[in-house]
Image 1: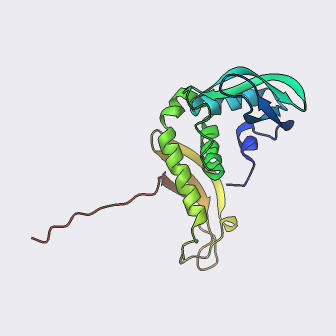
Image 2 (image 1 turned 45 degrees about the vertical axis):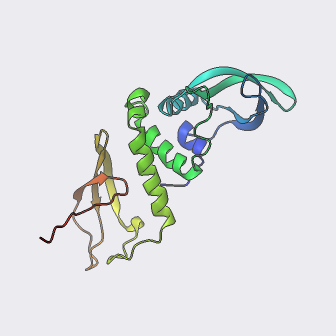
Image 3 (image 1 turned 60 degrees about the horizontal axis):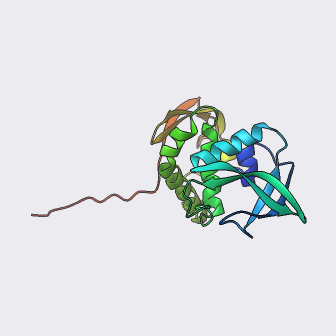
Length: 199
């Protein structure tokens, strides 16, 4: 996945502008937020989709930006005692989760994706852990840029994911393989316990 700012992943493009704003209102006094101006109205739909999946809803709010009182829409958690339950989630984990969530936009209802959120977050955590780990020593030194990816599609998008790839890769003899179809089960980190009774 290319490293792209979270807002670009969610909006599909960079916001027209972003500035700090100090919020007003019960429970929000003096809390800082980021006010973004959207370059495209479709961005609000995309942002609303992500917020709904994460259990937030749009609320009209006021704040102070550059010394002036402004109005806008703030996405707040549906849990009143914790208006921002995602503030302690790492940026890397949220970025990976948002990338998967936005892949569903226009195809699946936000309510349905919300039910899959535990697995989406688990897969995101696995990706973050994999990026932080040393790359495994593999028999093949084939780089990703040497593989020709003709197509990639999600063949199952339930609680679990499978993706089907149509690709070609270099072989050990230097030639290119014929087109191959490979199915991949997208999973989280797992531990397997094999009970053994020697008796």
